[in-house]
Length: 325
Image (cartoon, rainbow, N blue to C red; front, side):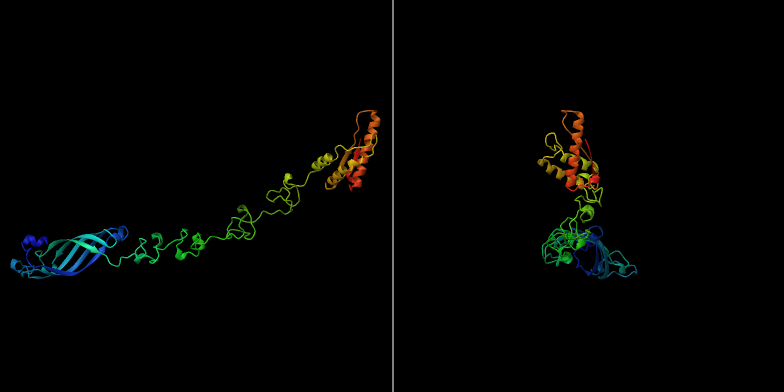
């Protein structure tokens, strides 16, 4: 008591008891459980200290006695070395306003050892039980002491699939993908039929069933060939194919009679021509260069006519065929 030393009363009996209010400042700047815990305080006290021998009068001209109402205001801080144990320092200015004199006023300094009770952490997860929503199960501070077993950011207490990671929007469960196409059912317009992401989980259509998807098919309503981008063969392609089938057709020597081994080629060419959707074809006959030119021209015409007749025998319409030598 610095005031008592000043008055030479440090050996006098001194008693002060009372009640006070302490306002923690830590919560205004950081977590209330921070190790540095400053505060301000105010207290109302009964002070027993005999000043009568000092012949000091109060503001009313009366002698100051030994019983006083004291008002204490001050600052202090606690420094928590562990969750439950710390040290503190405090400074107060004690005044006796009812004496109307500052003779009994004094400064007071104190140091304390502090123990906190009830500041427990039963599951040892670093979150105090008072703040722990799952005090019996070790968890994470970000989830107020509750665990997140699958690490999906949804605490187990809110997670309907605690062992399988899933988004918060689906209560911690993975979105289903019934058809296994990589598009979640919630985004899949065809959840029971596999399809690409680009088509919202639906398979690309193929209206003409030609094996070329409509998105790549230049003739989506007419069956065609892959090499033609889904379009049917052109007449030029039919002509080229039929010509290839009719290469090396054999005849009897110096005659227009077809040899038997040519029949298979004739049959193949007939199928091509019949599939051409009514296309017309010109059959040109040939001979070698030996002999009379007029004779050879006549023979080539006859041979071309023989091929036309054979094609008609295999079902080709006569309207589709012409010949020359």
